[in-house]
Length: 103
Image 1 (cartoon, rainbow, N blue to C red):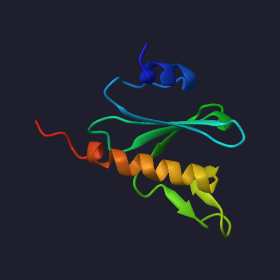
Image 2 (cartoon, rainbow, N blue to C red):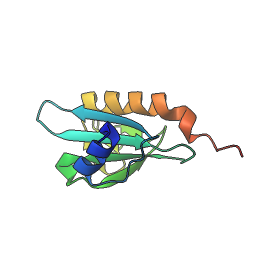
Image 3 (cartoon, helix red, strand yellow):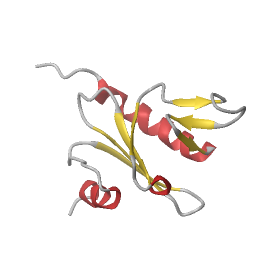
Image 4 (cartoon, one colour):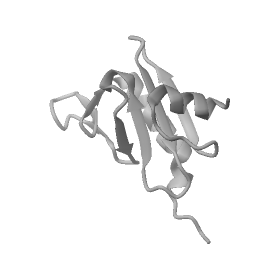
């Protein structure tokens, strides 16, 4: 079983072997999984504290202070600084995969 298959089983999502994948365990024991497929305009984020609900994320998804001063959000999800830093790194590392597929 590949790491991508193990993470797909963990979060209940669909993750292909060729996807870019990131995993994060925060200080509270909560797990986050990020996956980006080639050619998709956004990545997918799952958070164990949100019952593994999937969130679509892209280069401009991380917001600071939109809801309340100093609060970091990704869509409707509130994240802490470490989670936002990790997600930002995942988005940067997978940016080239969000470009349209040339055929």
